[in-house]
Image 1 (cartoon, one colour):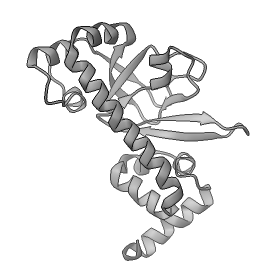
Image 2 (image 1 turned 180 degrees about the vertical axis):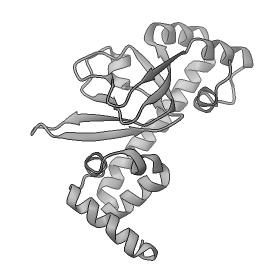
Image 3 (image 1 turned 90 degrees about the horizontal axis):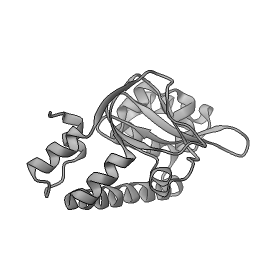
Image 4 (image 1 turned 30 degrees about the horizontal axis):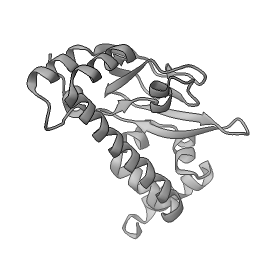
Length: 196
């Protein structure tokens, strides 16, 4: 079984073909519909997914009960709530499908089994985790150092599907701006593309 999403996600130079075959075989194809929850706040994550097609997001409810988008998941990315899955604690985040999604699922017990059996999977995991940590750190710094317009343009460049399919309100909360500000930013970009 070969699959582009799995190949992209597990693209790591040290895997042997037979190791990859075993890892791929352990994944189960699964589908979600638009609006389905992949994980709900208060529940413990018992699996992670590799997104083959579609768009999903994670969000938390702030102290006023407003939804704040924390992440957008696009094709060939791992959908996971790391803290809940590996610390075995209830999730503080919700993960929900913005569009219909096709995924590859790997449950916690199978992952643990493979993790202990295949040393290269541990190395892949460390590499993946350090990349994610770097990305989250960079995003938190950019929230303070870049203008809202620049943050929007970065999102457009890195994850254009988000701009295409996610509602304005979700994008605005992810960028840390109001819906009105985001509408203004979008209008400015359309009318003065060279300025940005």
